[in-house]
Image (cartoon, rainbow, N blue to C red):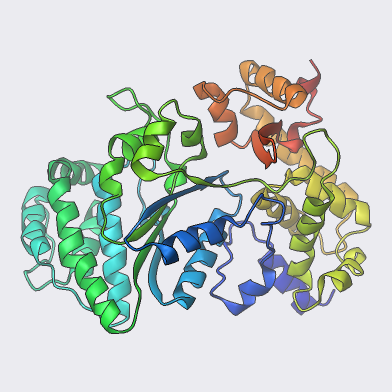
Length: 434
């Protein structure tokens, strides 16, 4: 492999990088796993938005790192092609502490990102209600913030959040002020921002506004004073307010919420979440899922040979790996978790140039196994052994849900419904044979 191709391959395999399907280069790297994931989930979200007479709120979930962000960016691209103005943002990038998120944080983030997106296409919105709010916030925070009644909405919110981002004391003070006013805040976002934006967008021939809020699946499940977990508090106790924005909205939610004892309340308030399942590498009975394995192999090979069709990529496996079995071992070790696959591959490339040897891959797997084992105590090992044998574990207990949240156990879907298995990295750990 020549140096130019190696550098492109190396960067394409960086597991910290999310494919943006609005980018023609990234489009070449995209592999469609819908045929083995039980359906075209993104098309379901897309059809719900494009066919709905009114606005609608939808939920999207799956394992951390299973490819949700890539799929949501594909949804953004599909909707934009159909004439919608789509605002996508990852709330984690706003610097929020995911163990301490309030409804007002989410609403302010939506207002800021929508305002910035509209500014970028020369649709400027005046603060309206926010003009007085900005003045009051400046007084509450008791810190200099250059805000005037002429401050545009997105700029004003950006200045406020910048002041509180790294100062927990100021952030708490801002929340204490805003939380009792969330109803007014929501009304202002609808009237001063979203309704005005929709009107101006439609005059330009646009079908309206869609907001996609990514990153909320990373909410910490810490208990709240009410006894609910933080995700339950935000999406169930406060979920009605999240659904009242006057535009189409898609929120990501933690996978563990789908196992909550209050799940039916969630469905009643916000609808049934759409789940992006893992890519199956084997079937419930332990036999190989050949279609899933073939697609995972293509996910690796397309990053080295994006210009070639799938059959020709397969002919060049030994330019990337010392033998075909090394690629198969990599895919099996990933468990069908796309970020895990790229993590292992990227770590191998940090150690040596292609063709990647089996010994380098096994060393990388062993290192990852060691990291995981350090964080697991015996009660969890007992549960993992049970999952490995039964392919099932009740998700009603918090410690069981922790196995999913920490990627020690994966959920798969087939025609019979859900089934579970351990992260394959742990399959040969000594503790699994006690």
